[in-house]
Length: 232
Image (tube, rainbow, N blue to C red; front, side, top):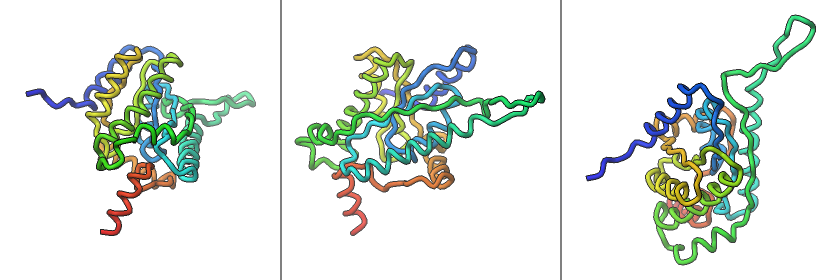
């Protein structure tokens, strides 16, 4: 019987090696599904990695909803970056910028927004329940593009914020990530960000930054499922 892997412990070991090596922080190309889910992940990882957030979510099938979510993502990153520097008087009539909290600035890249890619992927899977094969295919759609961009950009690692959600299958996400890493030649950073109270912390940070927090993943199928749940 295969032992269940603890992806958080695997991530801990990687971070321990990075810290012990005393080298420049490796680069991480981080797929983000939304600002609330990324809040804890960025707070946690920006101490160890130079992060570029990749906002690529063609599954968000309403344009207005997409624009609202991507704006919140950029607002959160701007707020985090503002925390990194303070003006310190040099004593000689001038000021200098000093890093705060031993963290690194975060960059963001917005991917192409093309819901047609999601609908093409979902053909034949429209009736799948939430959390099933359609969702797994959606994981791969977004992670494949992330891996391609990470490879092209020469990043040390790629990963996703998706595993922070209790509704997302962390084992499947890591399985897909490892497959793409082997196929495309860029290292996958294992994760299960809901561990260490990551999901709880994301809720706290969402309140702290007054983030728009949606109650469905973004696609028309999850939206319909959420509406059915509200009516029961």
